[in-house]
Image 1 (cartoon, one colour):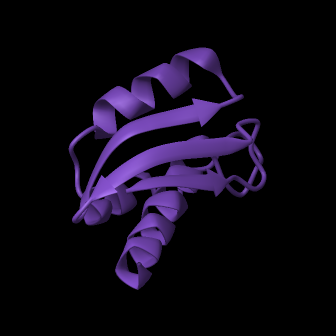
Image 2 (tube, one colour; image 1 turned 180 degrees about the horizontal axis):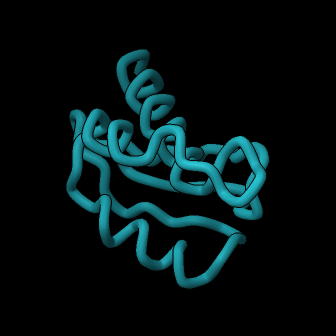
Length: 86
């Protein structure tokens, strides 16, 4: 299932991803720091929602309370909830 998540508090404005069962693939960020947002999708491709959430949740960017990685952790949980409802 394809899923889009509108981020909050980061330079990236949106994250698109695919969820199949509990596995996340094809993560794409829109906006944000180019290098990080190319690396993160490669590093998390094929991981489960729980693995991504465990690794990325709570990461901060500078003085912000969140980061693109933290927003990804929120996005994958939201994607799992949306997939369960469909």
